[in-house]
Image (cartoon, rainbow, N blue to C red; front, top):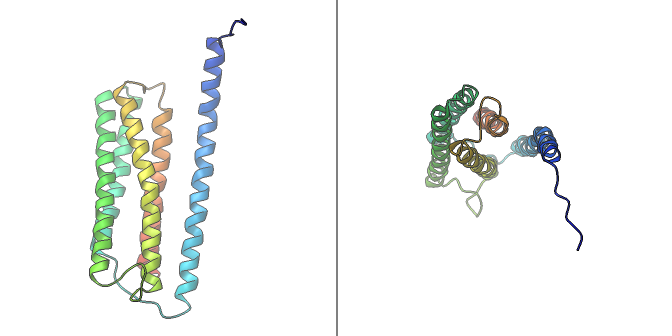
Length: 199
């Protein structure tokens, strides 16, 4: 039988380093693709609005609350990263946990906003639907789907933090999670302002 050659510790370290080096560019590629998706949707929104038969309505109050919540969640995630850089494990865990809870709260307010719209007979599809309402549901739902990915990322980062995998010398995983989460925050603020002003 042939003896299996075990990879050397140096090889493993080089492989991990290469994976870390490639992870941020890959994340940015993913972010750019999401930007293109929403750029296409908002462009289609503007074109369709100019064609007439466009229902004008106020955004749900819950969307204002969700905007404040997601902006706050970015602040708590910045706090978490700073705690990691100071080797403050409890502060790191607390910051990530609060960010995750705020992410859940954001999701709740989004659902509340949809319920508010539905109660006003602003629906996604059907005989009583209008393109303006359909676009709003679609845009906010797609953002929420991407936010769920962010919540999973936060959970993984929180789990690794509890296991003590991060330190001042190793914050790579937290940085990746932070980049994506801050992007979702900025994206939502853009979408909120877009939906508020472009009616």
